[in-house]
Length: 212
Image (cartoon, rainbow, N blue to C red; front, side, top):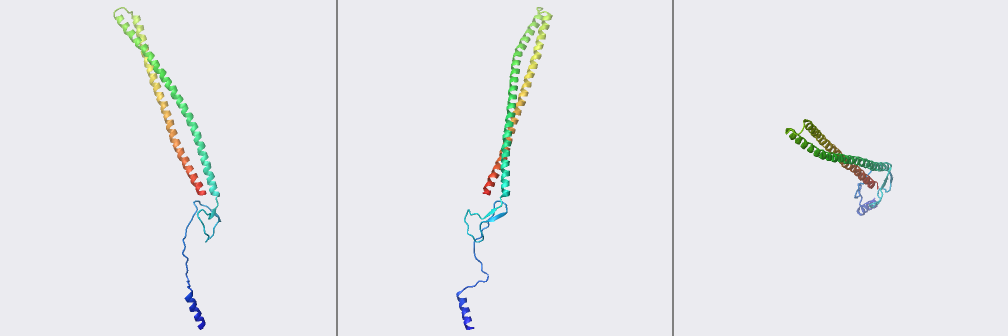
């Protein structure tokens, strides 16, 4: 008994015993930027790792499908933009052609007004001269009536041609307004399409970076 007691005292003096021991260590949590099921672990508890080491491999089937969807959406947007550009270009050409036609009509109507204005002024002077001659008894009643008729015809003609000019101006203004609407629509739609396309490209790039 004495020998056992000596041994116990000697062991207690030389060794330290702990019944609830804990090891102090740094704990780090990590996660994947993508959701998925872990199909393989490359490290185990207690392994040493360095930055860039692969810790686990995820099932990438869903991620691959999503990546293909983004690629297809990008291709679709590019095709839609090309089709829209072609249509808007055709529309602009047609509208510009109509503008050119209406401007030509307005120019012709204006030139006709100038020509008829000269004829009207001449008919007016002739009628005034005929009226004076009639008062002096030099011009016959028939001659005065003919001069009056010519003057009134030119008066109606100048009114009609001026109305044609006003109508041509209105048509030109309307077609020019249509052309401006096409340009506004082009700017708005291109801005919207660029934003959608840019958002898709950004999502696509971020997705690729995450996938890597």
